[in-house]
Image 1 (cartoon, rainbow, N blue to C red):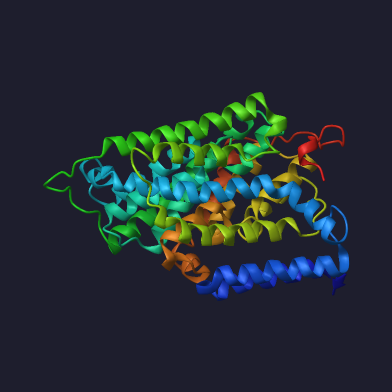
Image 2: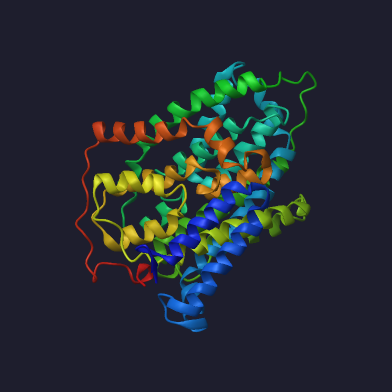
Length: 413
């Protein structure tokens, strides 16, 4: 069913996103109401890709449950790990090593960028948020919060273990070196948005002076954080290299993180009281991801440089996971360009990426589209400049369009 040529599902989804943007103090309620409206409409009138009625809904969720489970476990697990890291007192010692002016804030963003390339953009963002909370005495400007999320997304965009979307490409058979090409625009963008954000933070609340008493670092806590992260990364790499067909059928990454946290609990107990708040933000993100996956998008416009550039802006409001799945199904993209577009593009709005949602669970003042755009508008030109820089250095070289036989079974509907 269409209204003025627009499917009703898109209208409901747009109203859902508009409600999230306007009623940012009630995002969970708005997202759940929006998802319920979309589900009820499809149950009553048009059905799902997997079929009509409740059976079709269950079939649809059967395709999505692994991604949704991984996101839930990662958001909640990394929140606990970030708190572990902050409680270790290691961030409080960072002023001893960082420059004293705005360059210290920029160095912190660079560290987040690097961490996200081999951890995960959610972990990179939350660890960066924990460090910023210590370094700036809890007075972190919205502009810098947005920059942390953007740095995490940019860093994860050029690594096949740095973001869910790049991992999806890896599973689908895209060589890691094809994704690595995104390091060019990701590095350029870091300077474009990172320098003004660091200057804004320095003016808002300068970095704390090195403590005279030099707080003792709980190295056991730091070691446990490192072990859990290494375990999670190892499981992700091993599963994708050795058992790629099974990666779409079980949330190995999230389960590995949970096992690591539980195994470390006897040595340093996580702050379990953080879980209720983390669960709320996680459910909000899952509602957005699920709603996006229910949209009647059977294919994207023809793969081209312009389409890829536009997907970056679309990723800020439409979840990048289904966009990436459609692009892989369609083929014909330069995967380095696409990884940058869908990976970094979500940084333009706070709920456009899982890293942004995770950070805003901690820094709730940033949970406003108006504040985000007003304080960190330079993320938008940073995206564009990075894209143009890549085009100048690394020409567009797409793959051939996919055929039905070449599309991985796990990515087809």
